[in-house]
Image 1: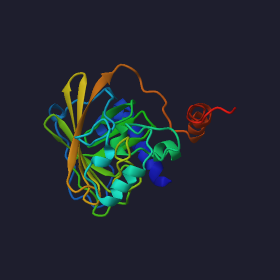
Image 2 (image 1 turned 120 degrees about the horizontal axis):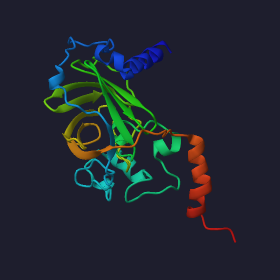
Image 3 (image 1 turned 30 degrees about the horizontal axis):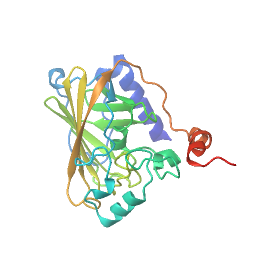
Length: 264
């Protein structure tokens, strides 16, 4: 509980304009580098609310629309999971007996699935920490800059992230995932060995480009990457929580009336 209160306090400090220039990175076990603060001129401006263009439901570079998710090169166990998946998106989309852990249990979507929902996200950039706030499920990420990962991070839904600026690009390196999330909307799984590298760059005032590289030797024989673009949105963020009661009501009142034949 004490750690939760501390993390929430750090977020509030980052959001307060008077504190933005004084926010400090939290202490991290195993961090081996002293954080440095790049000059303001060297830090790319990622401000604004960003909204996906839609259309891509898979990170498979050969099948972004998710028409044949089972054809991606995978370990046998991963292929079995994809074939057994009943996702609400892609070519095999269904709302009948879905196996999507978000739809079924309101589990956190995970880092890479959050880029696939038609909801917004925004950045809070401080000298030593970048926060990413997501409209969908109201989750947020803390990304210390110019630090190292702990030597043995505890498995987590969002992993352990560290970041750095490379010119006009924010690079986020993440390890330490649990294996409970899908990497996309069509059911591709991952293991606890997943290593993500996100490269986020503002192409122009209204366009953000996000490239994600996946390296998971337990699930996929070779690394792969995908790229998506997001547009600046004029709309404010709204409440978009995952509610099991609302999910169940939708299933009972909407989906069952369309997937079950009417009683005679």
